[in-house]
Amino acid sequence: RVEWEVIKKAREEVPTIALDERSGEESEYEFPTLPDTVLAILYDGGKAAEEEPRLLGTVENSLGLADWLKAQGHEFIVRQSVDDYSILALTRLKAEVLITTPFHPGYLTRELVEKAKNLKLCITAGVGSDHIDLNAAVDHRIQVLEVSGSNVVSVAEHVVMSILLLVRNFVPAHEMIERGDWQVSDIARNAFDLEGKVVGTIGAGRIGYRVLQRLVPFDCKELLYYDYAPLPAAAAEAVKARRVEDLKTFVSQCDVVTVNCPLHEGTRGLVNAELLKHFKKGAWLVNTARGAICDKDAVAAALKSGQLSGYAGDVWNVQPAPKDHVWRTMKNPLGGGNGMVPHYSGTTLDAQARYANGARSILENYLTGKPQDPQNIIVGIGKYETKAYGQR
Ligand code: NAI
Image 1 (cartoon, rainbow, N blue to C red):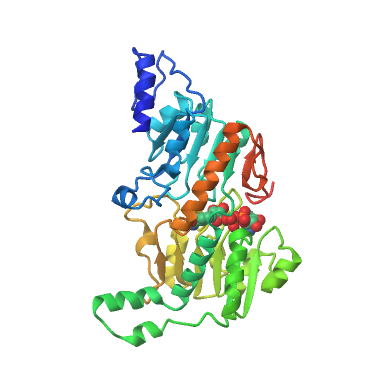
Image 2 (cartoon, rainbow, N blue to C red):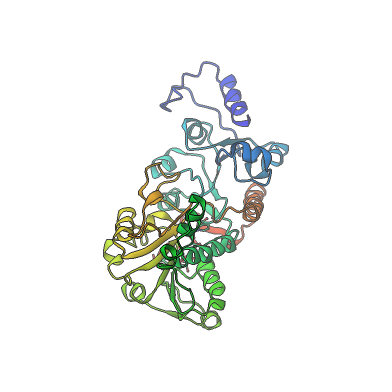
């Protein structure tokens, strides 16, 4: 394994190393700096990744970067979590570049940012960099780049699917069939058409707008959006979307709310018990943005009471979600309304090809000193370069 080679090499160079690997405690010896070391925190794809090379976001297939980086003489360390060795690579082997994905995020806390003295660039292979303490990155002049746009269609399609599966009561219907039962009334009593409903998106950026575009042919009663950045007039007109500036007023008008904004200080816990009171009774909520935008317990309680008829999404406040996470099994009073899946809407094989390519060009630009595509820069040197991660 590549990372073992690096660690072995470091040990050979400093044979008396007395590092306490488990605690990561400082020892009296310094690890040598390995220039341009790239650390990737991906996830263990197991048998699936061995059989399917297009599963690029896995440790096994390493975004297709291993041979390319090696050929250029760069060190490439791949780990599956922020474990002792990846911390070691950041703090002692002094990795310069960190690549992570949002699907199995490697959480880069302020504490780690402060220790990672050589870190200059974080690349998110995908979209959504909230697993990195972005304010700490600003303070420490670490750039954070995403592969903007790489999976926005993948997510928008998933959102439309999730809206439909909730509104049409699909999951309990399928479970009934697997059980060997057939009682149409039990399903139909809570199944509706999307036509004629009011659907609103919190966040009308790349994904939110694509969701609105895809909803046009469903003849919804109205499409609404809530975003501090108004859509260009022509774009709003093209999907006939109306902006609502007050969040409570917005949710009170929607039959379906879909969340499509990034997670930042202004959106953490945005959909909480207080806001849920303002939802229409029996509304459906879809969140493929980030789990922590919705308050875990408030959502579970709203579903249980019937204030929400359904909740669907693929993002969780902690990932991987613990086995007993309430969102895995929560239900509405009729025993349905749960459309939760693991975080995969933005990691279809099509999306993986796009974000692997995008991560590689960001890396290539960095290593060869070429300018980056401005739309990919979330945090530049010492400042935010996007308006999407909060109003500052
Ligand atoms: P984007 O940057 O194109 O759009 C985000 C929009 O949210 C912007 O228009 C921004 O003004 C708005 N926004 C920010 N704060 C807001 C607030 N407090 N209230 C209302 N609107 C607010 O980003 P994009 O590409 O549409 O992605 C959005 C998010 O979706 C990502 O940040 C990520 O968290 C999530 N995502 C999830 C994926 C998945 O696999 N589940 C994959 C890709 C993205």
